[in-house]
Length: 333
Image (cartoon, rainbow, N blue to C red; front, side, top):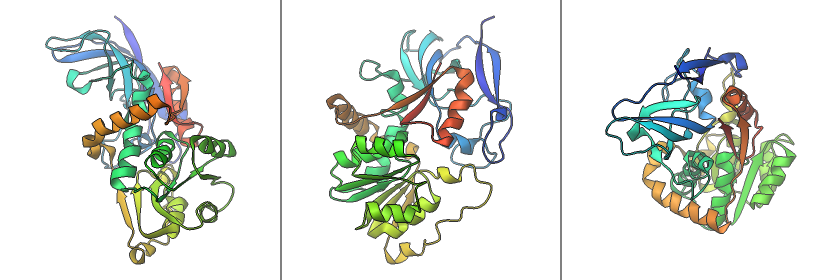
């Protein structure tokens, strides 16, 4: 019997996850039944939202189950198909059963991708969920208009780095980013951000005021906490916030101390709107067309941080939470 490996959730973390919360398990490789495909995964994604799924709480996506494999975005090659399937061995597909070397899934859950348009890994980043998140959050949720000033937190990550570049390409007058190290600040300037700051270097409110002294119109929030509080202070009247994530709170064991100035949203007539990328699938065709054009012309850059081997996937995920990555964090299988 052929076997392969997958990563299971061994226990639920309290605060920061540790390697002990994961277990590498060997399982049989099944044969596909009618309507199914077997995929050999090539690249898998680790993403901040996965931290929330490690908790047994009600959310927009079901929690991971203790003793079962984790899941998430992956790209791989079809190696076998069941009866009644149009896909063929050799096709490259995007699907949601990562954290394992082989994935058995319904064919309708596998979306073919074109590896001649971009590397397969790009469909987990710039041309995938993070890219659509950036595109929809900035242009639809926050409704950025040309000439506005945009602030992006966690701007060196997979989503934030694209938000800043899309904002500039769509005519923003000024784009400001925050990141967690001087090297990442330099990286943001390479991407075309007009200003950037290391949030460890001083109070975020003061750093943002220095970077955008006339205020901001749009805040793309990946962090929450003190970043959201600083943005509320900096937003001009009728400013908009796209609430994408709150990574500063994902491993916290105490309630967040900020924002403490939410009442300012009343007088400033601010809009703070949370969003889930799955609600914006109608934008996918426009998003792929526009980003593919920018990628082919060299106007938009995306970066990837790779960790090799499924056994190292938990460490890649922990590294993501620590901010070890530039751009998209991926695991090569």
